[in-house]
Amino acid sequence: MTRVELLRDGIVLYLPVGHFLRLRPHLGPGESAELDPVDPARLRLALPLRLHRGAGRTEVLGAAPRPLRPDRTLVAALRSAHRMLSHDRSGAPLLAAAPATSHRRRLVRLAFLAPDIQRAILAGVQPPGLTLARLMEGDLPLSWARQRQMFSLVGIAPGSTAT
Image (cartoon, rainbow, N blue to C red; front, top):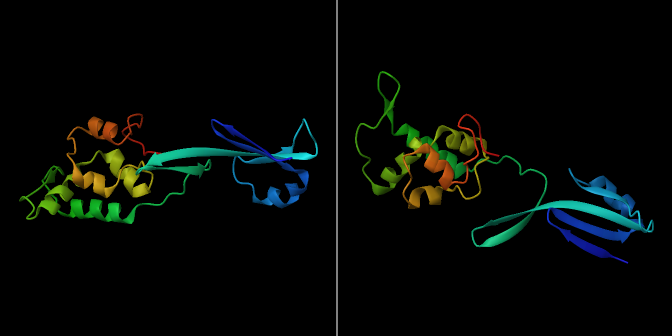
């Protein structure tokens, strides 16, 4: 008999024990396959899962941490924003003239993101909702604390990166 249990943090499948040898080599971090203590003829396969909601859809993700994949477009935009700036004698950023186009005026704002948000972008660990489109479309608060709130990085210490 096959049975499925949905838990808050995962799913448990009860399968015929004959699947044990085939499944065991393919288990990932946090996943387990063991004999069911109630019925030794069944295999208890536990798979931790996470739900990710965004962009109008819900995705089921494995419990293993997502691989670090910096968003190339977002990283390139951040670098372009920094290239628009020069620095004064003390090293403070300086914008010599207003950028010529509205796109470049919105783009230069990225250079003034909180340093920890910029580090998260470069490391590829920014929250899923932090996209170039979102950065370009609306108002970006000047306050770094408000920026962290806006992108759900409230609990992140200023010297660390998001996970």
